[in-house]
Amino acid sequence: MNTIVLGLPDWLSLLGHYMALSLLCVGGAITTAPDMHRFLVQEKGWLTDPQFSASIAIAQAAPGPNVLFTGLMGWNVGLNAGGLPTALLGMLVCLGGIMLPSSVLAYATAQWSHRNRDLRAVRAFKQGLAPLVIALLVATGWILATANGYAIRNWPTWAVTIVTTLVVWRTRLHLLWLLGAGAVIGALGWV
Image (cartoon, rainbow, N blue to C red; front, side):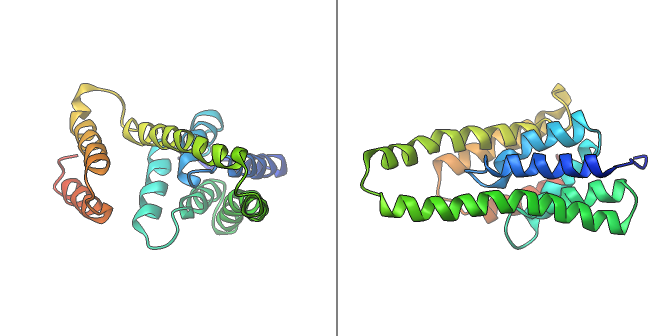
């Protein structure tokens, strides 16, 4: 990828976008990946599809919270914009942007909802979030599954996605077994 040039308005746009997405992270930061893809890859061209997918894959494979992929995306944007100092700036902008608003909101709402937990509206709101979280996770899976295109030659990727979805949905098999199986399938070059 060619070096990109980011000025102060671009960095503020990146921060503002991640701060806005932070408030949508009801199912975790990964649920906002489709919009991150739209913004970083399709609209701005600051990351390539492989960089976007690799950022998520590396962060998900690493120990620690899954929100780390946002910092890795910022790191890659910064690297594309000129090197180590901008990579650090990108990491701080994206990770800080995604963490701060949702953390403040989560703390404030947890305090309020705990005090008002018996209200019918509070219980209804909590139950209503479940379909939203599921839809956001499906959208994230769609973006990651179609990163290589929709062509019929990508049927192994689709098959792994469908089988994994069914196994997670219908069994109590631990996700680490599925991650391990995915690593073996990928290492063998089947997907």
